[in-house]
Image 1 (cartoon, rainbow, N blue to C red):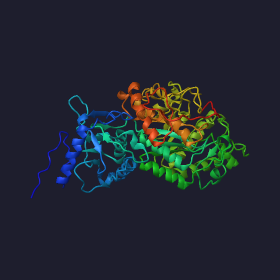
Image 2 (cartoon, rainbow, N blue to C red):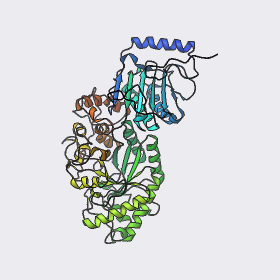
Image 3 (cartoon, one colour):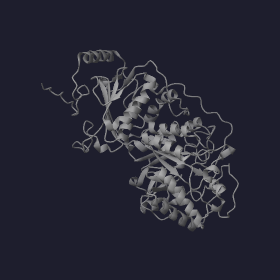
Image 4 (cartoon, helix red, strand yellow):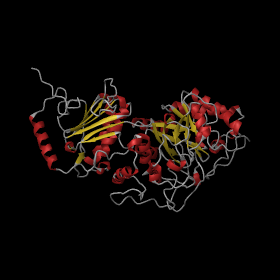
Length: 572
């Protein structure tokens, strides 16, 4: 006996209710009819298809195709996408209370979440005008792009790689009611708005930096920050691991770096450091969420903690006292001593071996006491040492005068978009990560009365964080030289996870949208409306955030951070 296959949909895809080798049983058909009858009487989904942050490239709503997730729903997945499916189930189970089994086997014909990795080589579809056909193929979306289709009987996410599938799952998470981010079951109609989304990132590098050197944050706090990045499709976590106030990564060949240099922090706290096992745990946790860890070993300045541990690295060979203040620019390793370069090779070699990602950040900023020629020679040698580990050099834009090495990336943190020295480094082959201090430095205060943070780069409310274009921000730097954007959070005045979150939200999603969404979608009025719907999500998830008056929050937001001790700094 042969079975006639179900007719394809207008998009050329098989319908969700015609999975291979599966005929609808009478019970399945009855359940489908009952659910559809209920949906006809139900109100529309509370979230609109276009309410996603960051804004998708293409959104095509279909109000007649809302899907309701029910207790008998299941997730069917292609084998290579199983890990993403398991994470999606983990996000949805607590609040829904549904079992949401994950399988690649036969399932009921209705109520499905289907996650599929494309196995066929596809090309970008286009109409006569050159625009993308949403009903067409998805391979042109690259490793991070995805397509999401919502119909009355199910949801399908399709991508060319696991990262894209993960980003699509994050979008689906945002399309469910805000209560889905809670930790306990709630009574809710779990409706998803109908239609299609086709999406991909504007820039390949989208990140945030957490300074764990000025104040130390334990592993669990860092993992929670990783989750915050992944929620908004940011794909890099830059860890500022070393500074004057503390050395935070264990190095087997130089054990006193962590044992001695790691026990201080700003204000005289206990400090701390990550063992290599701790660091591997952070890296693995991030990788599962398609976030790449970028370690920073700041050289030749910002090294007081290292000099306390190993005085022979200092120019005077005399141990300095431990430092718990917030001034900068006074310390540096001895650039005239070969022992210094053995130290650099050992440290970056061990950190590179622990880090599967392609980047290693050399710092390079604020070495005020090192003469310019000596600084340039040190950086050129240090860059060569990093390149020998197989990693690509990243450094703050003060590295610009040094000779170029293949792939070098400069992280620009200036406040004036006219920077001829950086533009010249770009002409010599450098790429840029943009972190303008007066736009995305998340340690800046929101307003004059913000209880923590600094103001040396100005006050940065969420509107200011959003209202700029990375592709045109620097004079004489073409958009194609911009690798992406990163929002640094320095922690001279930030001491707890709640304070970290308060400074991240709501500005982090603003930066995420600049990095992900096409320039044509950038619109402050629309963004603030979409962002407002995330306040209840953060409240449900227990995330502390700043109730910015720029945003029309739908309900009373979380209680703001209260602090009376305001540590300030006037620079990076």
